[in-house]
Length: 283
Ligand SMILES: [Fe+2]
Ligand SMILES: [Fe+2]
Image (spheres, protein in one colour):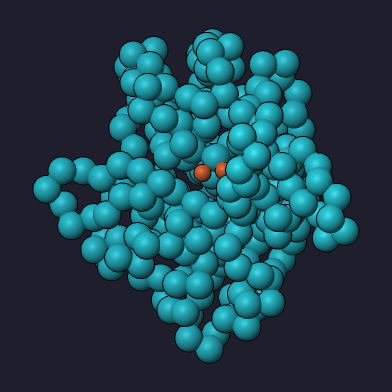
């Protein structure tokens, strides 16, 4: 198996360390440096990614690929900023085709749009070259995207109840966020897994990556997990299931929620790390 060396740094997260120039926002983005090139995984909501990249000396002009975990605006909002930095250069943007669904939530008859805030045409004009994937794919030697993650565990329903999507023909469907995908890098230390929101469920995601890769050593899992907002059963069952894996570093970020992050810290004292803008790990 080919392994990759490199480093993951969080550019956008809900939390920033004290006394720093970094800015937080509700969103997620990670800068990934490897011997196979540099990548950006998600782009936050749009107001922090460039500022934080400059402050952290992560050069957005030398990225080879952009990866989008799913269509929500807190992961796609910074796309134009990142594309603008590429100048005239076209750049591959890996994503599931459903990132362009009209995603919204309906509460008390009030509609809140939560999807990608730009059209495909606009982003293509800015230099995006979309590479759509639904399957598990290798984007460079040893670097994989999950594509659609099979939803298998009985306890990972997510907080989907009021998430809707309007199709081009006007039909409204429940949005199970089929587009949700994660990244898996094969390293000498095991799998480096980067999640966007893990709407498919963190356990479903880990199980799928282990099945597809044949590797069950997990060096690090970092990213949003959404488990603080998916009910007590999903949170406690996910914690129980997480204990069955061989994980060296567990870094729940972004949409995990502070209460759930605190709980995970208590349950996984040895392997837990607090996520924040500027957090970094080498592999
Ligand atoms: Fe999110
Ligand atoms: Fe999301």
